[in-house]
Length: 281
Image (cartoon, helix red, strand yellow):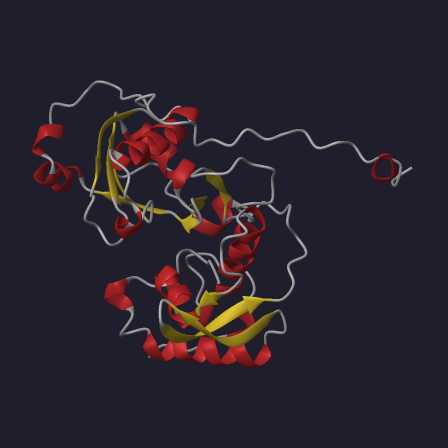
């Protein structure tokens, strides 16, 4: 039986915790809570004024729980919704019409840490699809990644939404975003495939070796890309080769095509506030 622990709703919980959000345990995306989803959406709204300042409650659920697990986690999720709606002062429940249907939505009323590491938009970054920071203040503590990567192959989820991708060669942009991010961390990729029909926004990657797959995992897992939380898991080499036979002989290190603009935000130096610099003296 799954139980709901209300005290975990506003903080990160490690993967091995027995008191993770809503009793979801390992089913949560490594400790990402509904409040954190709302905080990151709030930050995204500050950059993009066309976004609605609220999220439909079912949409938040879909961001946190895999489709195959939603039925088994229904009771725990219902408890989480009840607790947040009744007890979380930072969250207001409203009724909004979205795409012709009425939904209950959550709106974040206050977010006071726009510069925190877990915020995807706490820095001054350019518009467009870019990597937006990490959801974890301490990756090692939150995720507990393996010391030695078990396989050179990865499955990356939530890089895109198929129905939203209408441009020609959009999948090349997704590939480039991953290649650019991994190259930055010296992770060599020899094969990459975007599953353009995937409802989970999946991309499959084979790295040159185990060291590179570990570096790629640490570079991408738990990062925000285009307002979506990206997650990564390891795939066995045998399963990867079964799905992509052409990857068996792949050895050349891939580079971004150069067709896309950079997805790594260039941060602008913030001006020094003299009053802040003197505050400790």
